[in-house]
Length: 94
Image (cartoon, rainbow, N blue to C red; front, top):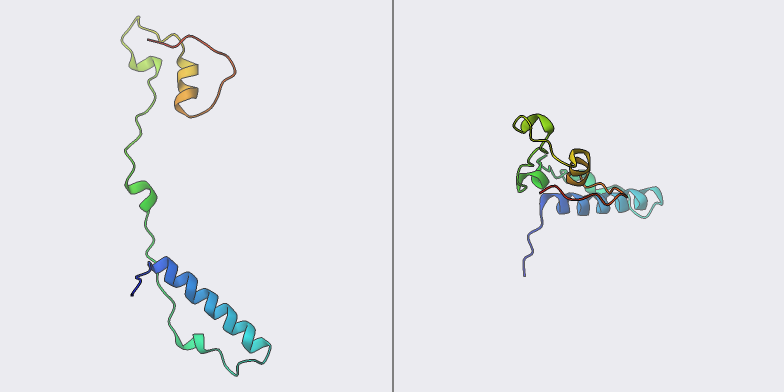
């Protein structure tokens, strides 16, 4: 069975083998490092973690609301949208 590995996995495996061969050469177990003959693996630099995410909606501010309409808890809403916790239980804005 053939297992196809990603470039990052191949690079990590090659680095492990190269490190072991370096150790073996230092301790006179190998005459030369055979990993010097093998090219390094190139890993493309991408932002794959951010590619699948939906764009974040900016939090609503008092400036975005029509005149005379003020949210009841602008600071608490801003903090909760950013994923932080607040110790006070304030009524939710409807």
